[in-house]
Length: 304
Ligand code: PMP
Image (cartoon, rainbow, N blue to C red; front, top):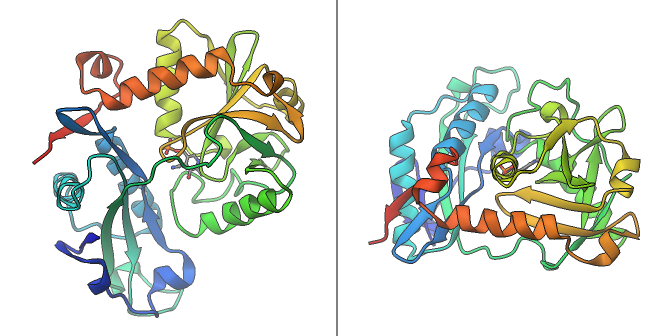
């Protein structure tokens, strides 16, 4: 695999970074997950500039300087996808506080920032594509009061990872983390939607990442005539939902067919979920004007 590291494309084996890097010890890295889709003639990198904007915000929240423009990063991403011969890809840019001082009492500018971009073929995120099981009660999301609540920062994922591992230990596919008041927050790396009586409901972004897939689904649902409501959602509302699904770049639109051991919609993928899953897959593969008309903002490049 060829990886872009600090401006140069190199073999993965040659990407070396000190074991005394700040990011490794304290989780002080900002990162993104982006997907590229094969649309036939083009490779479409879905909402790339929106992902880069969030990456920049996350790096700024950590105080890590980014010495590359969005255009530099965009070119680097397209190069990585192309040079690895990929047409469908999961793309992982990461900006980390590198080697230097290991003190927490430093200006991040004292340490050399490390910027890497990797891409690989990552099909389905969950093995059970036809509906996964969720479990509550195995973890709380990082507080909505926390400084880094909207930053996609490595350190926060230790909490999410432990909750997700606890869910699997209890036989479920994924954890649904609650906020500090006990309302639904999000899964370890995905947002959640409920469908009740034809209305879509999702937690506010107070204690959930403002997902780009979440935003896309809300736009598509509105276009399809669904009412979408954001609010504080109880575990009871999750148990009583007609349909449940997760959204995220990695898991796309993943139906949930079991929550806390109870089947959702008789264990079948619901009609609304199926319809939105189809619309989403059409949107991500398309660089057509319909997509930009709904401000999905797809960026594409011609494959070499
Ligand atoms: N919440 C968390 C904690 C995540 O890591 C992700 C994945 N980035 C999401 C939600 C979904 O965000 P997006 O749709 O932008 O991938």
